[in-house]
Image (tube, rainbow, N blue to C red; front, side, top):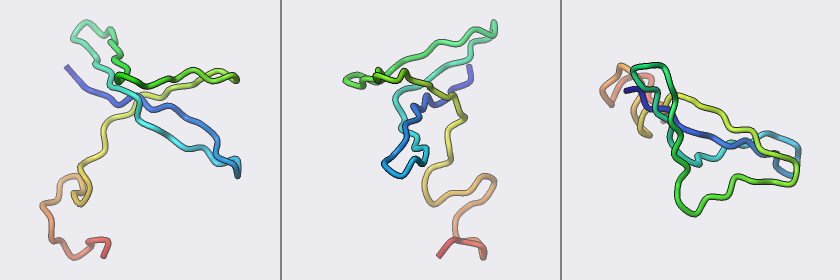
Length: 75
């Protein structure tokens, strides 16, 4: 089963799109997708809401395929 993040997109005061993680989605073996919204999260807005499904990012400080301490570290 593949896990995805559910992200809600909103516009900030400058009009830039911002994404907030609001839950998780799971792609099942039969191709169906189940979505779980985190407790206490409201995704309803007067304008309507769009959510995106994305693969989770690697934990902070880790780049895919790299074990920390490489020469191209961002600091």
